[in-house]
Length: 304
Ligand SMILES: Nc1ncnc2c1ncn2[C@@H]1O[C@H](COP(=O)(O)OP(=O)(O)OP(=O)(O)O)[C@@H](O)[C@H]1O
Ligand SMILES: [Mg+2]
View: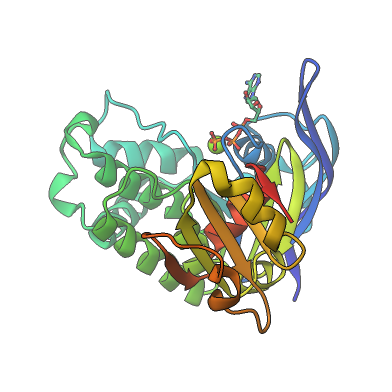
């Protein structure tokens, strides 16, 4: 697969703080690649370096083979961006916001207007074209920002938490739009705090923590290698945790969160093996998920 996005040892410092601390990855043409990580991990900073909102401190970035240090203008014309903050102009109507943005890319007149109206219809915002930005709900604003990103028919979309704050129905609708864009050949590069979103959309993800890459791979492979196939969760009397862990620690990977214990089952391990010594009224057996991987990696009290 030909890569259309490449970061090599990318670094961004603010004063002494290394917000992005030497990350390297590639995204293939037509792929949906997800950047995950806790608040402050460096996801938005990484994104901003790709579209010129933030200077690169060190390392290299390429988009569609173009070096971001030399060809930012061409890169901006080839990509669409849904930033974490909407950046809509409240002094202009919905349609005007799109037209002004289009003009930055040399689109004007009836062609720009036709494209804007087409996108408003696609985003189910056609009835709002003359309305003020402030009259839109949070979910409508997100749809408008996606419309804005699509004006130039970009080959690559950068989506920084595209569905944060959306209700479940609006999120499902957004996912469908993204899947259909991907089917048409658009490469998607997104950040999200919703593990379900990453599992649903991304063929590969990179998990960042404190500016560094801590894991990379297909969601299913990461789940298998970091967690296993199933998870048993139960409440345990805090006074008995140490004793119980003493019994199982050589057999099971586990994670403690206050008085709740998670046991990660691998290969042929069964819940019965783990629970033979425990009586808990509140036991759950479920499939391992990306959420388990995330919590494990991003450093809660945990032991393997
Ligand atoms: N303009 C800035 N000046 C100084 N520090 C900054 C600036 N922008 C970001 N940072 C710092 O860089 C680090 C990474 O921030 P960034 O916004 O990239 O995180 P993030 O992974 O996008 O987090 P979130 O999930 O909350 O959006 C944080 O410690 C943040 O405080
Ligand atoms: Mg961010």
